[in-house]
Image (cartoon, rainbow, N blue to C red; front, top):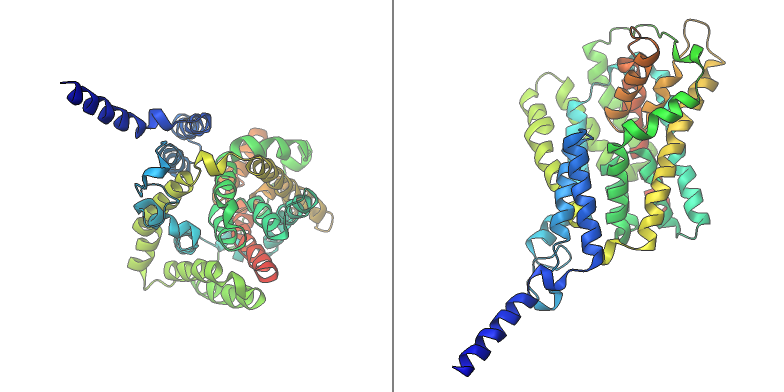
Length: 386
């Protein structure tokens, strides 16, 4: 009887030692609370739910504690595990180009084609990337790490993941979480800068209705866009190629099925996997570091610089435009490539001051230009630093 009791106690002890309760650390609890916060913000306030729900739940999955010495092959960083195999799409940069294919297939570049000067607004917002890059260098980060941090300023999660997977894979979790967090927090982060940096008169500027763009122009644009950008930065080809290919599928008129698949089921599946794996990668043992905190703060700075640069550039550009052709500076924020979140914020803030002044279609110009701009910026950094 005594041997049976000892056997039972030993088995119960082994069972308990393998549970999460026996292996939990304070870091796991902190990250689990962050995961719950992400899910709450996504559901309660609809902050980019398509991103924050998968990421938030992924944080929960990634921070279930277990005995690493047991070699269970269940953790995202354990080679050969199911989660590790799915994570390769993030680590090796497979998912971001597929996301760009879907983005291209759902994006209408008409606003940019009709008013090409708006591409300058998108370009101005990329100052956030290079500004944060310089600041990160001053804080002691290596050039490849600084580039991965700076790209957060583009507010483009797939681009941030793609570049970081090449230049600084050890920072992938922190950079990805920062990029997607700030994309989701656009309604909180951008409006204060937009209101502060513009006068009441500027907020009320009415822009001319955009001209009608022909179907031929829409078809030509992705071909010309690819050739111009990819010849300039060939290292950005995986992103730029897929973006313009997806757009050609949409605009050609003869590949409707392919376009619908790219912007529908395919991009939904990849978004689920990408968001979940980004969250899973935030294991407390590798994520909760001083460097992660710095990255998160620098990401906010990069995003803020990008927003301010876009608004201030429009104000400067207006000095050279005739009355009647001026651009409302409230669309300057849309140069960050969070499509269509930042363009929608231009509309929302603009309506606060004039309920009949609709800026959304105008803001889509710099918004889609920002997508191209962030991919070009990533290509430049990859070409110099890889």
